[in-house]
Amino acid sequence: MIPTFRRLMRLYFRTIERAGEPPARDTRGRVFVANHTNALIDPILVMTDAACAISPVAKSTLWSIPGLRWLLDRAGAVPIVRRADAPDKDTTANASVFERIAAHLGGGGNILIFPEGTSHDLPQLAPLRSGAARMLVAAEARGGVPPTFQAVALEFDARTDFRSRCLVLWGPVRRLADVPGDGEDRIRNVTTRMKQDLAELLVEGETHEDRLRIARVAELLATDDGDHSLTGWSERGRQVELARRTLRAVDQRVVGRVAEHVDAYYAELERLGLADVQIAGTPVAPHAPLPAWRRAALAPLAAAGFALYAIPYFLPRYIARSADPDAASTYKLGAALVVYPIWMGGLLGGCMILPPPLSLAAAAVVITSPFAALRWLDEIYQRRPEPTADQRARLARLRIAARTAIDDARSRLPS
Image 1 (cartoon, one colour):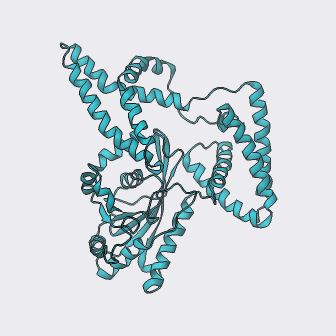
Image 2 (cartoon, helix red, strand yellow):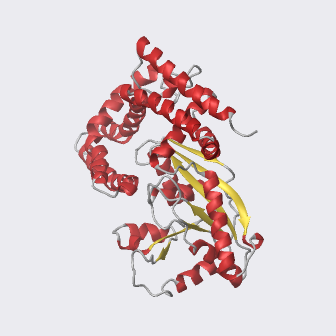
Image 3 (tube, one colour):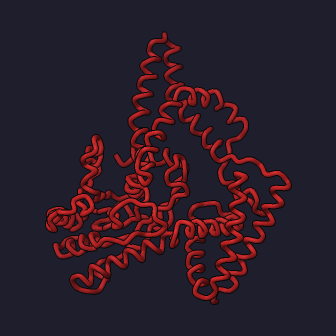
């Protein structure tokens, strides 16, 4: 099942980048803790990026969704009863689950848990629950493989969009034996260490506006360095976040000037539908466009794909609009996994009406055309209008002002 989901993730996301050291195939007795901003997409990304087998811990209510129970059981998922789902639950309701997880870890199994407790769109980590730490301590008390834990962070450039990009960041491996304390003090120490590890991997902000501004400054710096990867953006974003906190304590006016000029530049970019990479003095290609001859060769097949699969392409989007915004990608992917096979099966059945070899040729078009259409869609989504000379000159002035404010702020940082 994991290979199938790995292919689905490579299909859903245009690119999946990785930073840090992922767990090896022989990893045993480890609890992975991740941030949670994209519902069921998050565990699939972590499990498919790791070489070792991982059993996710999930809220018990997911087992009541038709079809999902089978997938969760196949993935070895463990249900947890959350207080948010059962406010009057007995404090011992999950005792058997914790015992099962402790035995799993002690026997060399691995667990994935989202200690924030729920998927969200906050600009920073939500408070971490202590469940992951308690699982580790319980496994240690039971004996067996010495337990370890590792943070894994997920970043998205457009988390609800089909064919967007994502980044999986693996943090350092921690040994539970190295965390000091006893009883509840140790639980708190482990949870604090997990939060620190996740925070060091993520780009955070105090508000959505604050995080967006940090992301934009990071993009400006990365573009000028010729780096258009999410990994490069993430590295610079964390540096910008640290610098902003430092400067706010020294001179709030410096931070305000950066915000003013960066906001003005990006407001004009958005108004014109342009991207920073088009204005930068040292532009880098955000994607590798298809050669003209290949686009021409794919055009007939792509046109067939657009015509044949328009309904199953737009239907998952329509379904996701009425869903929880935090689970939009999950609904899109889930609906597509139902709609596309049924639709393709119907088309293939219709091909059988034709006499051979027409039936075989039609079936080949039905099977291959959606992939050609997808490649064309990537080209369309990433193509932007070319700015006029006046627009480019005006945007260049705004960009220089933004970079000047950023450079001035950087010069005021303590050496």
